[in-house]
View 1 (spheres, rainbow, N blue to C red):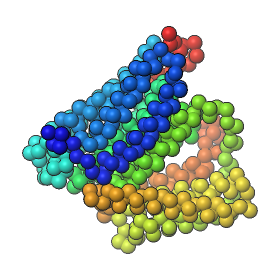
View 2: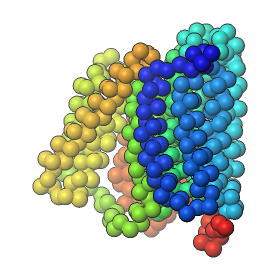
View 3: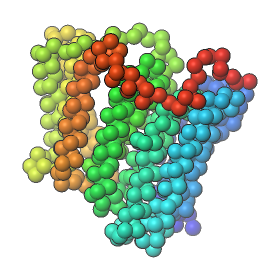
View 4: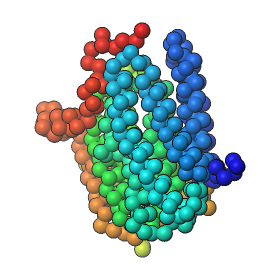
Length: 438
């Protein structure tokens, strides 16, 4: 009986390891963070239930069990978000999540029904290999994609994430490090079906790129540490969905792992972040430093291409990844030079190369781990991929010139981005006296 309900494969093992590692750290943090809370036991029980539910979801093979555990995960998450029930702003945050995650859950149910009917099977491990390309199955996959976008706070569902900052810190850490990655996991689980629909893949590239661009822009104008982290998560989720759209599901899972670990650390460390000395705003880089940094970025991209066996002939969608690595390597080396001086540029160059190698090896490990699932499917190069690469380069150039985007020099752009990045007004606590928890 149990064998017909669950299926353990390399993807579920990766998820269980990640959830177990991050979850145990967050749970240990929560035992100290809310030690004197009068609902301490209830909070820890809910948090533990959330972790168990995610693990069950990762191995669920029956569509009914998958749907139930998906709903349970989101239900417990919203319950934890509204732990401080006497705080109206926290209740409104939960309400915003209910609206948007509810749309995603309803879409998931409809999608599962349609693909189950098309495959004449209730086992996901069978469905993903037997569903034919028909109008019904295409609508079903489209519904599953909508569920993934809602879960990962992709535009236009992003407001629930930006409005969730009233959550206790352990909840925010687990939400940003794990639960919000559910969209990428869902797309990867149904990857063999998504790959059959190039139009859906192109849509994922466009919507992921749009979310990554706006999330990054939102982050630039924030002054609150938790809002910065939330906008950063939005941008990272956009890039993860973009990678799925490129047919590079192992790269998306690798990104999910790294993002999960880093974001859990940053959220758990956020209470003490206000004590850190503020870094001065970066200045526009000197032309020679910029050129040296670009060379370092190109070296980082080249070594990653070698490790990942990415070739420019014939060109395909995977060429976008070295461009991203090159941008990251360039920015990393430029920041290092600005903080430590041009004399240490060779060290910055070496760090950029190491970063490119680390990324390449991490993706390669995930590719090898997930190889039995046949989830690596680079797509023939399309104008959408060229547009994505161009926008990413342009976005980085804008960030490099971010000192120009100030209230004084470009007030209209600054205010427009700031207004777009605001959470739902009913979730904002403008006065500390509005915070009530009896």
